[in-house]
Image 1 (cartoon, rainbow, N blue to C red):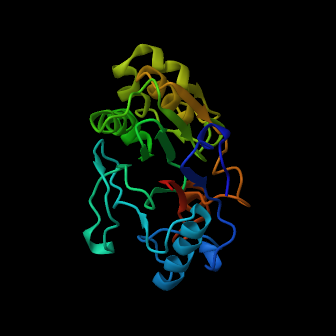
Image 2: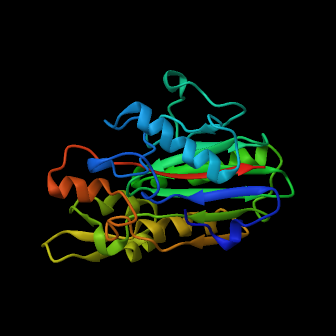
Length: 253
């Protein structure tokens, strides 16, 4: 489990969990927390219990959504059953003893906190969710519930890095339509017409533009560090049929 100094705050537990320390085997070795993966459901439940213990919450008190690359966030008061998970990508909580988390394997995971307001948040931000504003939606919901963005801390966890993220010729268009300045997040790749995309850089810009008081990028590349992280893109390049999901979670305790 990796912690950010910025989130080591009174009454808050958090962790950007690596793939180590779990029960799964094979492609999922070992702390796969993905309910939607093809892993054994019992092993995934055991892995999520590892997360709960690490955060100091009761087993079963870890809530995640059915992530769909949206720009929608919701408040969580109690964990959902697997079948009742809402289809969205941002979670906010003011309930003590409840961890909220997001699952990633290259996409960005952002954890938020406003200690004074007693609010925490988490969002899953792939390129599509980042572009349409999942970070903004999570911040807005926290603010609606009493947080202030200038008091917030937001930390970006393990995410595919620019050196690992090649995109096709049409990909930059939507980002450049949003702002010509976004050209700085693309550099030419070795493949003609293709680019290397800086998803972490773009996400950090969105957080700063939103007025978040303290922001940090942990600078950890999921694709490049197989020992610590799962990667959808790495699995795809190898022709592997599935991949594990990393958990990033935060709780009021």
